[in-house]
Image 1 (spheres, rainbow over the protein chains, first blue to last red):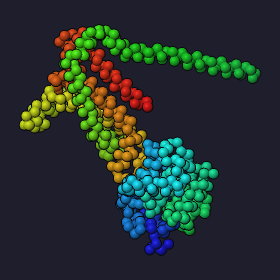
Image 2: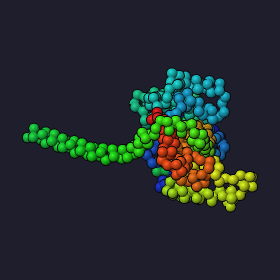
Image 3: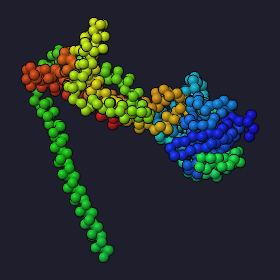
Image 4: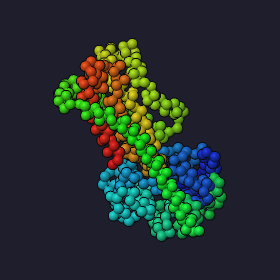
Length: 218
Length: 272
């Protein structure tokens, strides 16, 4: 992976929390890559995701997004989307309001918000659910809403934390299809999973982590 | 043998049921005595008030003025306190900082000290010798015996209800949702305004209603910093002291009815 094409570059990142120490970890991701980050529980993959998203600040090392050092940039200013394992949908907002939330934060005007939400609703087959309460959605629907919300403002990198682990076999296949479509749209994706088989046919790069270190990249 | 086992098991289950029923009966009786103790004096008060006396009391300007004063000051104090208490409650729920235990202890002080003693402390705080009192005097104001002093006393004794309720509400909001909002471009203040506060709204409003109700009921601290103008609890005491129980009773009945109505509204809101 040449340095020039890197959309995301991590250099010697280290972080200690409680008794766990991550790194030093270095990796780089090219634009449009679908990187699968796998490893057993406690290998540090979710921590790495949180560091990239800015929910944690590294003790050492640097994170670059399109060449810009974002190591100390606030999560709200990073242009890094994150799909949480439990989706983290806002229970007091409707499906429409959930998807519109990042657009409002990024100062989109009303008609732009309407257009973008409708576009995403069509893309993720959510049009009929727009006014629904998020608590009333199925697991698959919740995930599609969370995905639509995460990419609504077009973040440069999308981080997925175990996106398929909470879904049953049937939903997992349809969800993989959605991720495949996202990948083909050119979205750069970092997909954390404890199950290597889950990213079969999706990943362009596979990174394996173990006890806080990157064990292999292929 | 099998039948014998079934019989034994039935007997044993019936025995448990019998013991359980006995316990329920004893506990219900004991609990019933407490309920009776709480309800009987109030029912007695309402029963003993004669309709003409109640009507006369309603027409008495001193009573209506005291009720209006009490409700207005308590409302204003609750709203002003909320501006300061809600951020503090959020900090206590979400952040770790040195001296957090001490801060939580300070918040609870008004609950454990006698309110008359709190009134004495506040009196010193706003007297002419104090910084605030002398500044007010310089502006031609005497704080002692003013609605400001009443508000101060009400706030002092009732703020813990708001802070603690709001803190519990914020603590119950999943941190994950706030983190998600941050990754979706929301600033810290916007996360608070659009996620944390709406999700903790029920507890915050409950805390505000409790603070309002506790503030308007306050007597001990208020009577020391402001005998006049009279809040309703002070008026009840004044009527009792000057004219006896028959004059105090109708005012007490009216005030308790107002307090109970607020409490009822709170319960309905909480159950919604």
